[in-house]
Amino acid sequence: MTPGQRRWLFFAGLAGVLAFYLWGMKGLPGFGHYPGPYGFILNRIAVGQTNATGVVSAVNFEYRGFDTVGEEFILFIAATGVATVLRRLRDERAESVADDEVAGPASARTSDAVRLAALLFVGPAVLMGWYLGSHAQTSPSGGFQGGVVLATAFVMIYLAGQFLVFRRISPVELIDVVGAVGAAGFAAVGITAVFLGLPYLANFLPLGTVPGAVSSSGTIALISFFVGVEVAAAFILIIGELLEQTLIVRQGEG
Amino acid sequence: MLTSYPVAVTSPYSAPSSLMDVLQVLILVLVAAAATGVVLIRVPVRQAIALSAYGLLLALMFLAFQAPDVTLSELTVGAVALPILLLLTLAKVRKREK
Image: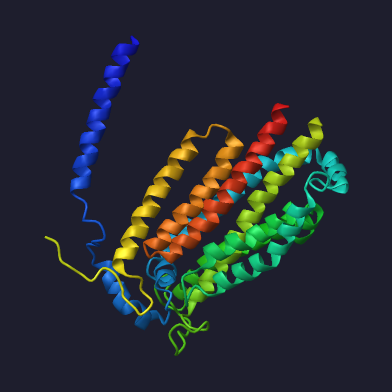
């Protein structure tokens, strides 16, 4: 096939894609015109039904909680996959890692300004992560966002050149267990409802009396907490495995 | 058939809708420009940093379109977690190549 023919083939395909694309766009609702009705219904009834003023969290952890269980396990399985693929190599060269840890991996190269800035951000990141994870029921936040922010606090500690500290406060065995507890906790909340004779993931805890209070919303807050724990552990695990892998390769071939 | 519903919630703190329109158009243009920039940058490390900036813009876009929850998710994943994972992977690949 000559370049000329190939170009014509490309243009023919492009025209086809463009035609279908424009056809599809024509059927979309106008900009800013939500065709409903679920969003409007939920806006009206969600706060009354769940006592959670964070309606997005109420949707995620209550109305479509079953979908969120699946999403949570996607991340859990991804982290498990990363750990499974990367850990075999670490065992092969475990001795060289020990040497590197003693020397301190990043300390030789990281500038003081970066280390100081990273350390300064550790406290705010922990606070922010904890706040987001524990306030899903009151305001826009939730366990997922909180978990990722918590995990970045650990990355800050690594950036400050403290891989030893990073490992000491997040040992692989502990992070494995914490992640599993978080993932299982969500599923367990759902199964507990079944044992109480309710549908899976039904909100069986007292909803509280004041809408928007931290203690309100029953299982929504609890599930958000478990999600936060699981997400933080999964991200720390993935980042930790990658960091360790980097160190091993650096040491093994340096 | 298009039923009309009130689209935006207004409160004493709401910005004038004309101002919001300008803000939304501006942020959409910036997002398009940043996305093009990320594609055009060919050096992987710089691309990861540009991707982080793009994630930040995308987060601001979601905020301008009244989706603070998505803003938080995009901030944490798009602007922080994804670039970190990319940089770590690049560091690993680079060491292996040497």
